[in-house]
Amino acid sequence: MFGKSRPKRTGGALVRRALKRNSRTLAAGTVLNGFYQIAETMVPVMIGVVVDRAVATGSVDSLLVTLLGLAAVFVVITVGWRHGARLIEASVLQEAHLLRVETVAKVLHPGGIRTDLRSGEVLTVSTSDADQTAVSLEIVPWVVGSLVATTTAAVSLLVIDVPLGLAVLVGTPIILVVLHTTGPLIARKVEAAQASTARASGMATDLVSGIRPLRGIGAENTASDRYRVASRKALSDSLRVAKVMGLYQTASTMISALLAVAVAGGAGWLALRGDISIGDLIAVVGLSQFIIEPLTSLALAPKTLAMARGSADRLALVLDADVLVTSGEHSVSELPSVALRGIRHRSLRGLDLDIEPGELVGVVSYSPQDSEALVEVLSGQISPTDYDGSLLLDGIPIEEVELASARSVMLVEPHRHDLFAGTVRSNVRVGMTDGRESVVDL
Image (spheres, one colour):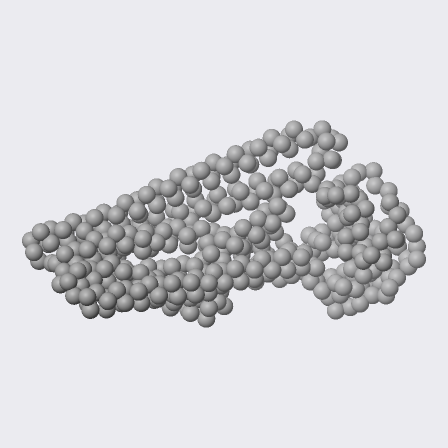
C-alpha cells in the first residue's frame, strides 16, 4: 500500500518532454517566425536597392517595382509575426496549463506524496515554476529565428562585400561561445533564488494559517523573526541574480554592438574608397543596426534556458515525488473493527487498542504529541513504513486494504486551524444550490 521509488527525472527531461508534446505547433510557429526574420532582415537591403535602382537612376518604373517589393516584404513581416507568435504563445500557455494540472493532480493524489516542500512552496512550484518551465518553449523559435536573421544578414553582407560577411559569420559563433560559458553560473544563482523565494512563501503560508495557535502560546514574535530571516535571504538571493543578469545583459549587448559598429565602420571605409555604392552602404548600416537584436537574443537564450531549467528542476521534485500510500486489494465492511497492535510512532510507545463494530470509544490523551501521533497513524496520510506496529481493519493490515474502502469507513480529521475569507455561513454554503441553502442554520 505504499509507493515504490522510481528513477527521478531532471528538469532537462521535463523541458524535452514539453518540446516533444508541442512539436507540431512549435514547428509551424518556428517556420513562420523564420520567414518573419528573413523579411525583417531584408528591409534595409530593399531600401538600398530602392536607392541604387530608382533614386540614383531617376527611373519611375524602377521606383514602383522596388517599392512594391518593399511592400511585399512588409506583408510577409506582418503575416509571419502575427501567426507565428500566436502559435508559439499558444504552445507556451498550453504547456503551462498542462504542467499546472499535472502538478495539482500529483499534490492531490489520494495517497499523498512524500516531499519536504511546505504547502506554500508547493503552491509556488505549481504556479510560477510551471509557467517559467513552459517559457522554455519560446527558446527554440527564438534561437532559430535569430540564427536565420543573422545568417540572412551575413549572406547579404557577403554579396555586398566578402570581408563584411565573414566578420559576421566568424564573430557570431565567438560571441555565443564566450557568453555560453556563463550559463552554469546563472543556472545556480537562479535556482538558489527560486528556492529561497519558495521557502519564504511557504513560511508565510504557515505563519498566516497558524497565527491563532501561535498567539495562544505567545510565539508570534519568534515566528515573525524566522520569516523575516527567510524573506531577507530570498531578497538577497534575488538581488544577486538581478546583478548577475544585469551584468550578463550589459556584456552581451555591448559585444553585439561592437560587432555591429565594426561592420558599419568597415562599410563606411569601403564607401569612401568607392568599393561599394551608396545603396550598399545604406544596406550595410541598416543590417549592422538590425543584427544587434538577433545577436542579443542569441546571447540571452542561455539565461532564459537557465531560469527554465531551475524551475523545471523544482517542478520535478513534486511530479516525481513518491506516493506515500497506494491502494491494496481488499475491501472492508461498512462497519469494520479497528485494531492497533504495538504502534510506535513519535511519542507513542507500543500502543494497543481494539474497537469493535458499533462501539463508541473515547481516547483521552494527556499529551498533545500523543494525540497528534495517533491521528497521523489513523489518517492513513503516512506510510506504514514510517511507524512500527500494525493498523488493522476487520483484521486486515491497512496496507492491504483498498484506499477508497479504507477512506469510506474511516474519517480522521486532524485538529488544525485554517483561516477562510468571508463568514462561516458563506464558507458552509459554497457549492450549495438555492434549494439546499435552507439546511444551513447559523
